Image 1 (cartoon, rainbow, N blue to C red):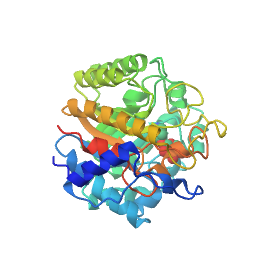
Image 2: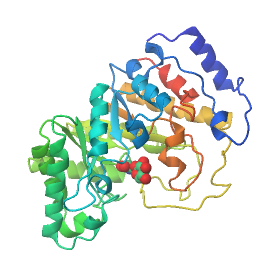
Image 3: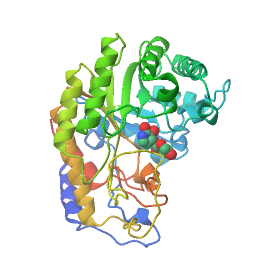
Length: 383
Ligand code: XIL
């Protein structure tokens, strides 16, 4: 892959911070070190990595509805896979027993088809973002009825259209045991097998994934491996493992990530990084993870870069992404897809989780949809 001279010069300038321009403090967006992107084969992630893996992004409602032209242009130019950030989750798509809202999901799927993208469904069975009526279900029989209807109706509607389903999301604890959820409580450990069986019938052509955070960590990884072996032993189809990748500039170690790629693919499964973002902000609880119900108080200490990322942190982020993509390229044969959890820093959920109202910088495109030094470093990598 050729990299134009001007881009190389620009990369060097950005890396040294030489070109940094000062902007009004009121706008954190304007302090990002981005540049205007004219799409050429050398400036498109999906083209650059076309022989390696799919490059995906999560889409929010405004992006699905193509409300912002600049975002739309960027998405079409950079990504060949899409995941709905929220609109296929139970609380949106099935708010009541006999109530389904398919309008946004239909638009999402139509968007993917129009742009010839790999379409990921996220997610069928998850303890979080459940509709209130599901949380109130008392009996195992009723919960099984919900699960059966939900999977048949949602996965069935998009059969032949959604390429890959996150069938079960985040079913494990950090120590690899099964998470205590309404599903485990009322249906027992077998609910996972049941969910995969239902999905296999409802969407026979779709890939079926187990998706979770921290599953590159040895203990939780061992839990996933045990789960997969059990599913396979019972003849249940599972095709892939989604390692979410809500990470930071501090970790996890490349060794843990590499071992996960190797061990999951040794089970005969595809491996994808399904929700990649690297937080640049302090972590309130010195633990890794992405448990969405956890929230902490905002403070200047916890939100150190409201007006822009210092060059040193920008460079650190770029180096982390570079190291990660080097590893991904090394194992490209085993990796199906790298999906970022969002298009640009402005829309990242990490501005509001685990602390509401911070300014975070976890993605490759800044608040003006311009590529960051991390983008340049990733694009400079060759096979
Ligand atoms: C997040 C969304 O990005 C937020 O907008 C929402 O408020 C909470 O959920 N793991 C997952 C994703 O599987 O669905 C979560 O998405 C992030 C953690």
